[in-house]
Image (cartoon, rainbow, N blue to C red; front, side, top):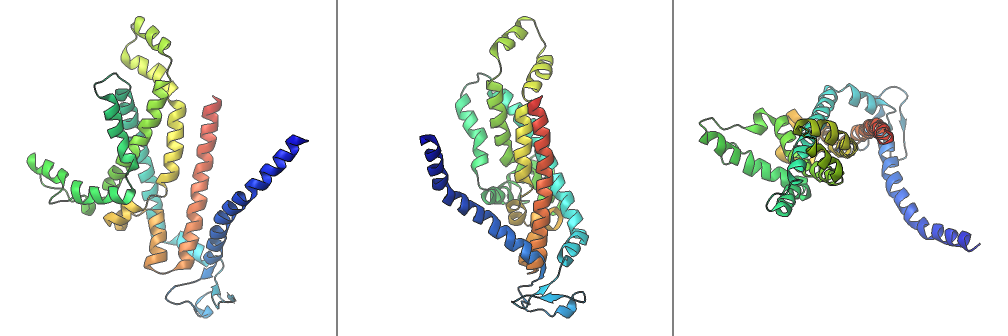
Length: 302
């Protein structure tokens, strides 16, 4: 009886927080869905319904109910396919660089090297830099074609400076985002390496197992689960990359899906189109997360 009363009191105590979280999630999502069915432009808040398909309705604020028109125009926009391609390329290459580089760094940091704790701190530090600050540093200090550090290196080697954001904007964005997410992969993989059975490692050394064979047949299977978690978490966040593209002005050639939604909403003032794009982005992200979760589930069961 006391246990049931305690549970009831616990549910009542948690209810306000659950309700607030529910409203925090549902209200913005519901408004976005509603706006996605409107022809709602900030520069023309009271449009004429004759511009839409025959039979368009008008809501209380005299905005046209456009039906699925916003979704149709967003999905058939040539910029949508370009944004999708850039989003997938960004996710793929950042995952490759962060997982491969994170594994190599984790193997290095797992060794008994001098100043290991300080090196670990320096390796993990970029993960705590805000994306906007990271983009400004890379744009003005590293990749600037005149005064950037990379330009100084190429000039010192006898080559010309590279204007990264003019000629290779996608490569520049991949490098910036990989630099920021590499520490995360390193930290997760390093934690997994430290949980490796020392007895198995000593037995392999006594048997004279070659380092490459030891890594491939013992370390790689041990890292399968943490690497899968890294891929899941990074993919979810990489689909939402925006600050690096916006700050560096690379949206013209390296714009992804979030940047396209920004162009619809704040550059074209098309709230209806931007809302439709936001809903499409949420649906696509959930589809990717669904398949990744299934992959992780199979990996964990195995």
